[in-house]
Length: 380
Image (cartoon, rainbow, N blue to C red; front, side, top):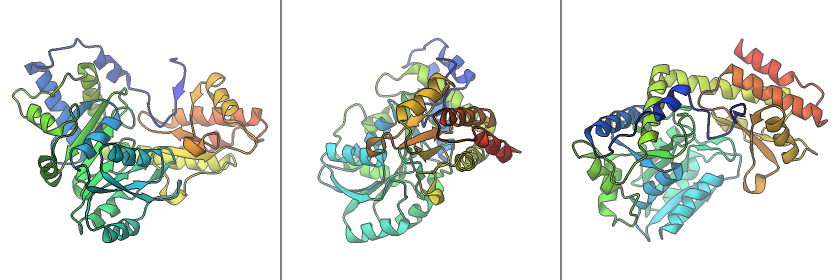
């Protein structure tokens, strides 16, 4: 297992420092020591979100934070606009439907991004929209939504702006305060490069007003309870947290800040640009519109006549690189390269060497080294 290079859109490889942090002794989660660690971790989390608002940790995957974001701010029967252009946009809408919310779908073609104009038109047509949900980085398609530009549109409306940055925070430009995001959620196992199992959420004052006016209809993900426990001295979580994952998040966030948020984002963008160039060098075709392509995952159309199991099975079993396949109707039609977290020139060279050799072995290309040569050129 240790020999497999994870080039997935999550989970990503954790830094040894993060793994070592998890090995520390578990402390009392109702005691002062954990309160200190929790405080430091949530303060670091807010710095990465780039907001003066408090952040809260949730023991659960990013989906837990997605559900908390909706269930606490929109009441059953109220109307919500959900941008759907991939599996995770669909997930936001399904969560809304599960909670009895009147979920309105703004569908965009998979592989393309929603435009601010589409958001504006949808809100003009539905003046009673309570909130909108947007996936910043849709890993199922390799598309990044223009969340800053959407934020400018949202200033003209009363609807809450809820954004999923699970696979973009610390890998792409996210500024909660500047972009006017009311509720922002993320997860541990993507660009933050911590193990899976922890999520984080931050809310604006307007979002908290909505929380206070919505009758609680979720128990474990009750943000009123999270706020009450977080205001204790020492701070706590309302229910038993994963102490070890808190250690991991703490160390991972420290690594982010040591690298510098701007530097880390620039590194991810460089990896994305290099990956796109290498895909083209191999004669392969991108799935997503390049103008809105993701900074953390590149989706590639499967070459004609090549079976997904043969391709990804070979890159993993023979060359030690694990790639992601397509989801839903894209299953077998695309593969996805995750270049997030602790990713550098070295990992990309190994990845594109594996892709090139696999495709040549399957008779799909002639030059197995074209991708590696392109990566090298990108990093010179």
